[in-house]
Length: 209
Image (cartoon, rainbow, N blue to C red):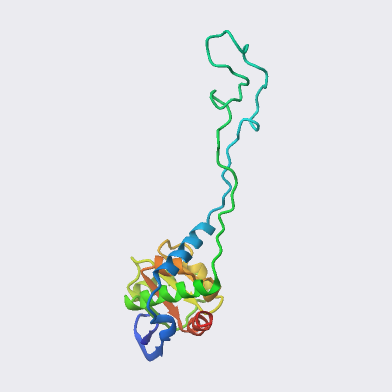
């Protein structure tokens, strides 16, 4: 599949690049995509939720009243869950939500996600660029030139580019990642995926293994 290379002004440079069918032209595997997205979202959870149970709250442990003869239910401690201020029954405890997935399944999921974007014609190849200083205004002008100012966009860089990354950080609808940070969720969450020329080789190398 051949795609025209654009410059930061949104105009064709006259060059074209060939995108590998093994990465951008496969039949998407929906189950692999589901597993990888579920894994990513699960791994974002901190799992630090915690509620105090009756043994952990501060309070007296003396018996409130005699066991029998009061006409009401027996009560052993003010920390009982049935009283206001008592401990919580079966409250949440810290938990590790991390999920693991086979490397080959993750690669298949990412190839499937890129193939879906390619079918939707939502992949743009942009020539490598940089900024002299981090300026949100400069990055916004690139988005306007590409017609993406009102759409979710994912820029994939071939390597570290601090000024481009910092220029995009204040924009809610745009995200800049390197090849090593590319994942299925981010690809599918964006309306358009913008691949810089320097990232193409790294993507095909990582996903063709």
